[in-house]
Image 1 (cartoon, helix red, strand yellow):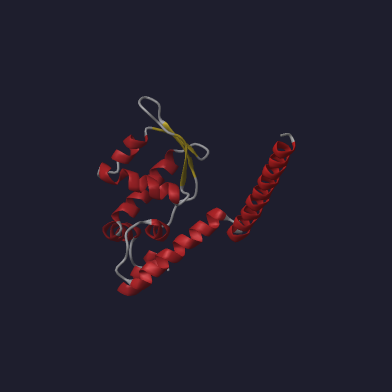
Image 2 (cartoon, helix red, strand yellow; image 1 turned 30 degrees about the vertical axis):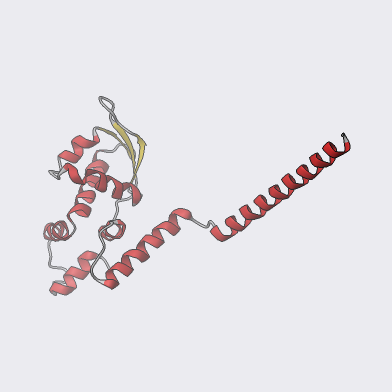
Length: 175
């Protein structure tokens, strides 16, 4: 359930909460995740054809968020698939990013390493993380891949043993 809907239902204000008020509620409860969305929006709004170039820390600093959270915020944006680092900036050279779809607050919260006190919330977060991993891995059948690798290793080991036996036979016959 989206955070806005949940908060609206709890407060009994189904559609009367102004978006600015909703953002302040999100920023209070999930400040790092809300800052990640704000940073994403700044990057998206200045991207050209989905590519953003420039000084990333300069844009980050414009949020007014402590640099302590920089790695976590950037990690959330990358892990959520919202941005992709094409070229890391350094010194005078700016960063180049591919800007993808805006992440939802729920997605960022699910990716966040903060463990909830509520078991159901933790279960929901884990479910979202597993779903995320499954989307990234795709249709890869991991047990099949492992079994295939084991067969290949066994075949190679047999070939090595056969080669050792032939070498031993050649050395015995040559003496």
